[in-house]
Amino acid sequence: APHRNRPGAHGRGAHDGAGDRALTLQAQGVTRSFGDTEVLHGIDLTLHRGEIVALVGRSGSGKSTLLNCIAGLDPGHGGSIEVHGSRAVAFQEPRLLPWRKVVANVSLNLDGPDPKSRARTALAEVGLDHRADAWPLTLSGGEAQRASLARALVRDPDLLLLDEPFGALDALTRLSAHDLLLRLWDAHRFTALLVTHDVEEAVALADRILVLENGSIAHDVSVPLPRPRSRAHPEAVALRELV
Ligand code: ADP
Ligand code: MG
Image (tube, rainbow, N blue to C red):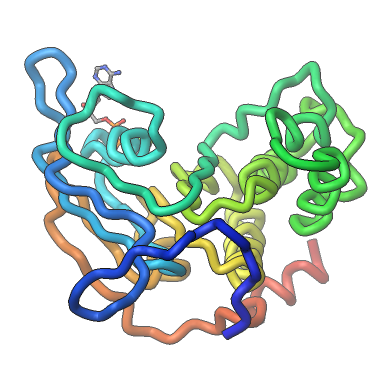
């Protein structure tokens, strides 16, 4: 498999005893309470490098709470969360700053040399090079979500955290976005945790599906179907020609 050369990203890597597969995330006994209400009841979660894992569950089951804890955005949790490598997050709302051009949103707070040109490269990868100098408010929903993906991707994350990233898109745009995510995975081989309430989306994209029920992981299911990860979905290719 073509692995990208990412010096220093994983360091030595972490390995579990059993399979010697590199781990990206080890979470143990994660709890989170708001006031007197415990929303997460001690979540154990391990993600192996390169896995796409979907976290599904009803509204209010605690998906976003768990994702925010893993993203490092919520210091108020209990238990331990160990991430091997770097993280980037994309949310359902693209959260672009309207007073900065698209390329400046993507390069915002980006370390390293030549942030603008790396931002343009990331935008090209999501098919938005022609919108780099546009204002965010002129983007369609699908374009804004792709810009949000570019903003995450340009940070070269080992762990990509996605909270209902395609939830606000219409069905056709969502299908192209699925296709895009798989192509990006094919190029970068990040580990991804994808929060969604759409089980079909989970089956289409994930290697493994976790079902969160009332703050506990009730099921952890491997997706048996082999997917054509290395090429675009035929349906999406056909649709791209039409749309
Ligand atoms: P999901 O993403 O699965 O829809 P959330 O993680 O957003 O669920 O929410 C889980 C539960 O935690 C809900 O009952 C929600 O009201 C509650 N909750 C989430 N964030 C907060 C907060 N900042 N303050 C109080 N309650 C919260
Ligand atoms: Mg949520």
